[in-house]
Image 1 (cartoon, rainbow, N blue to C red):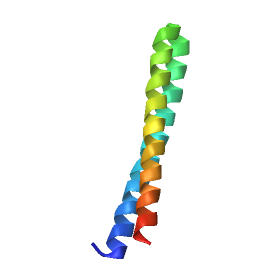
Image 2: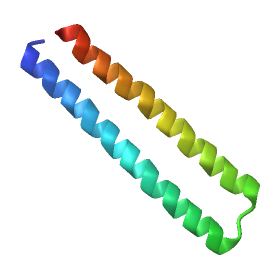
Image 3: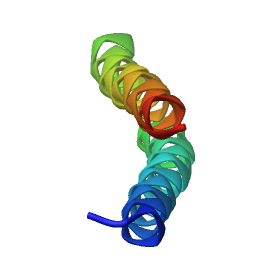
Length: 74
């Protein structure tokens, strides 16, 4: 793979990761609003908190891996 193809692939992964992070944030806020309006239990809300935290943790690891792939190519 050439350098420009690899940069394009890395950019594409970065954009996908950004959409996943933004989508998770919007979904999390939406779930919090819906849960507050419907009186969901703390246990149910905690489940969605942990799910969002898991996605954000995965995103952090993925971002680090994308950054490291750029470092290895230099």
